[in-house]
Length: 238
Image 1 (cartoon, rainbow, N blue to C red):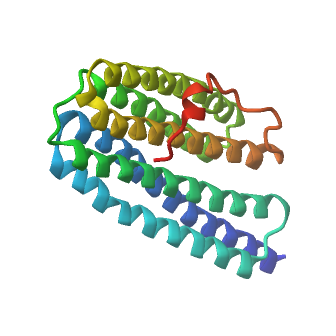
Image 2: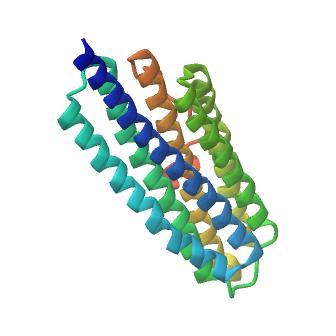
């Protein structure tokens, strides 16, 4: 029995360490989302470059989480709920790393268009959309820490708001391009940025679904609600 208790406490310590890395990674990703769109709106080249450089820390944490989770599986040989917990960590880390990549992509495109004339109000609109995703991510990570399936489901439902914002921006960019061909290049980049943010929302939703799986043992079996597919189906990959 003492040996068994030692194994359990060792697993718990390992899990706490991995969980701390996930939360640190989540904080860096939230910061990257905010700074990437701030750089666009403020036309701040140095901030955009800082976001791109900061992605290396997110990638390093992703590798660290995966290595540590793999070690725990090999050494502790967890079963049932414990194994589900470790597998969830893998998936959350992967989603966070992808969100960080999208923030880096936004910063990269900001550097490309920073010398172009601004298109009226588009930076602020993208920042509002990104803020919605940022708040969803915060709640998804809180749901993970608290093992709160209801909060995770709420995050999942809110992805529809992000889709609606993306569709509205897509139509807005089309209007700007038709009104003035000089806006075409900038609006194409802005569309890719909006698509990046929409994909961030999908990855946050995947994190929320992993939390639901962790708490209940089942992945949500209903289709996640999607709004208008027009912009998606026109979809250019960013």
